[in-house]
Amino acid sequence: MDINFTSKIISILKWLVIALLTVVFGLLTILVSLFSPKLACLSTVKLWGKLILFFCNIRLNISGIDNLSDKPLVVMYNHKSFFDIFCFSSFMPYDWRAMMKKELLNFPVFGQAVKIMGHYFVARDGSFEDRREVVKMLKKIKNGRIVFIAPEGTRNPNPGLLEFKTGGFFIARKTVTNIVPMIIDGAGDILDKGSLIIKPGTITIRFLKEIDVSAYSSDKDGINDLREGTFKIFNENL
Image 1 (tube, rainbow, N blue to C red):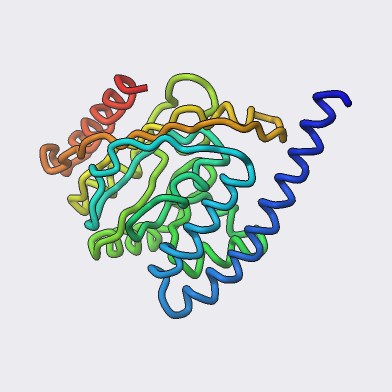
Image 2 (tube, helix red, strand yellow; image 1 turned 120 degrees about the vertical axis):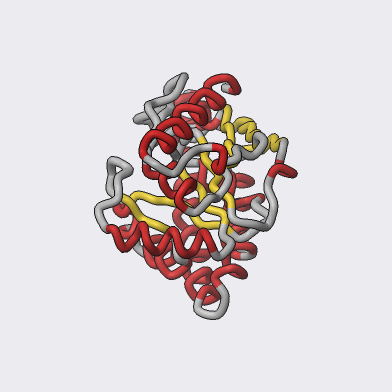
């Protein structure tokens, strides 16, 4: 049998499994979130991520996770693939939320699940259209949640980094919440841009040391300096 044909059939089966698991665990997450969004995050969401990685034959190599703690943190990551969220969903030991594109709310079940859990939503270009969303995020981060933010504002499967958006750094500095860089390597090899073929492989995730945001002023220049300093750290560790 042709290898390409076999790969397509296997990938179709994988996508069906992803869809099925997302519906089943999305419904479970909605139910559990009615009582405790934190419990949903650490149980149904975590198992959802683990099972998807298992069925897609994707392994994780994680280091530096001791740089995380159960306190407010902004985890910034280089967004390489559709599979990024499955990765950190599968192993995060603490309650977390993510900044997501608002278009994800249109996905049946998944959209309802992420909304009821209290994730944050931005425009397609990574900007904030609704100031109320910013206020909500600032309050919740101050109350102790870890939030995942992709500072590039979109998936970037290519080598190197796109220019970092300012929004995440504004949030981190205004809440005086330290930033933990999370470097993702290998996710872009799992699913090529424009392709539906899911390839097995290993994704490496490295958590770097906290960036002390209080070392930067809270004005526009200080936030830009924080953004540029964080960009430099990412570049040096890719």
